[in-house]
Amino acid sequence: MTVAGKFPAVGAALFLTSCAGAQVQNPVTSPDSQPVAPVAVTVTTSIARTTQNAPRLDRNMQALSAGLAKSLEKAHIVAHPADPSETTPHANGSELALVVDIGTLRTGSAWTRELVGFGTGKSRLQSHVILYDERGTQVTDLLDFTVKADSGSMPGVIVSAWNPIGFGIHSAHAIAKETLSDGHEDADRTAKAIVKKMVEYYRTNGWLPPENAEND
Image (cartoon, rainbow, N blue to C red; front, side, top):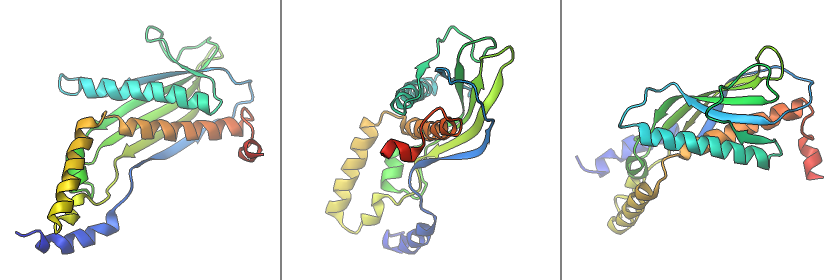
């Protein structure tokens, strides 16, 4: 089958394209009037570790934990990675604990995404996020939501196959991108989505100034 014969199908698929990103689903919040405490960030996983997925899993977990702590600090939310030896969350503490449980991790194929697109080779990262309050005799949930991040469904460079030179250039770019990829783009998208929800929650409780006040 020639490439030209596939163009009608590609055109139909354009209705279903989407950019890479992360969506927050099913948020549940509980207001809190206590003074804010530092946030300990920890990342866990419900995925069975195997020899094949361990390196990529560790890379995503480390990127998510470090990215969260750094981004929260930039948003004026005190945060630090939790001590791996300490059980989080736990009662009678002095902090809030932000626990991110990775439930789904599919790395997909950057090569396929670049060349074909339209969701082919899509990567996915689904996480369950809970902000716990450890500042009492009983641990309570302050914030609870799910983040689904993926690489999107944008068209790939194969739609330029009619131009051999352009196709060759884009193919080389796809190979380079696959080679240089650090494999945690969805972790970065997840961190941004989590920080956005945290900032919203902190502002709701008066722990951060309103958005307009920051621009004055």
